[in-house]
Image (cartoon, rainbow, N blue to C red):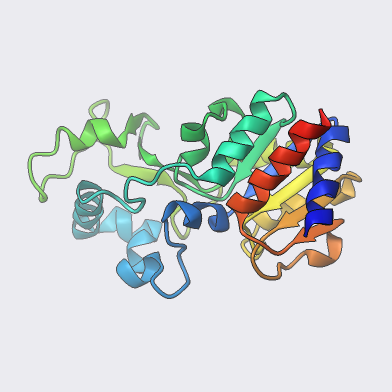
Length: 254
């Protein structure tokens, strides 16, 4: 593993445009369970409540969502971990172009990454959006106004339905975000996947786009991924410890 750590640090030092792609394996180190594993979110919540059709037609489903938010949401006050902090530090060093993430937890921004260069393919759970006019609200500001578990606020601008600003089943990914992320992947010369098994599409196309653009591909993940055969370096290890060691080596390089 040490040789691979050294190699990745050298690749980052030599690269002109580095893009990092993160998945649930980064968030789990902050105590956020993934969706599908034992003890994951789908064992605590009904996936059917996260279909856009049911959310729109069922007031009870919307009340249930607000109850979840009142109880601390899906993310349980999670804080950035060593992987998030290393990625943010990479940006501060001027070595990171952008982060493309499947995660909805806002932890890259909390760690210090510029929100303008974090492409959230599946949205951000800390915001609500009006499905009529598109106005966005911080979840915390709305929670302060909730009078009881049965109270479901509407958009103050138009009275429309408010929904967590994340992708529900049956919704398309945000097209501008997807296009911007695709461009970043196509134009980089080093693409680093961290904590994703690369099975959820279209997000998992990003490493393919990078390789088509002749970028080097690094995969850091516990367990195999769908695209290991494309990778130049594979590190089968935890995100936080691996990224901490890479940053230590990188600082010695520059």
